[in-house]
Length: 196
Image (cartoon, rainbow, N blue to C red; front, top):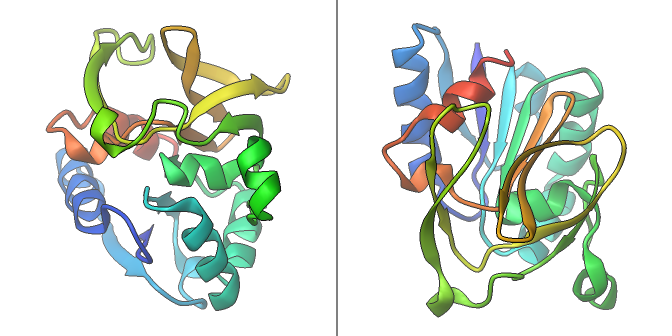
């Protein structure tokens, strides 16, 4: 089994390390591979879309043909997790900023997001959030984070922070406004890999 980490931009090594540690702890035999080109995703059993700069990520994924492969994987039930900019790319609607720039989105989740809702890099923070799927608070790391502003009827809210939705699930797809790869707490990755 292979797990894809889209390796164009963002916390690639951190996601790979978190995924490997979690799979080992779960006793799941899998190889975590960085994906920088098309042709690899069709043989993968799960996909992680790291953070970064969503406009650049979207453009490069389209140029490399990775976006089409992710859409096909999603429609066939492959688990996908997008964090921060990955969440923005998963959304059907990226808000005014995305419309103004003409940014390409994958459109796989029936949600609207507000890019950088929590401010700029210097306004990044870590805060405990309640996630019923985890049974105890989770220290979420927000870095220039987006927020989910609208959800469709098939969306399950996994977590909120203040008035914002910050983690959602739609079928086989999870979207997170925060960075689970930047903590030692593997419960988010464990939850994701339980979808395999």
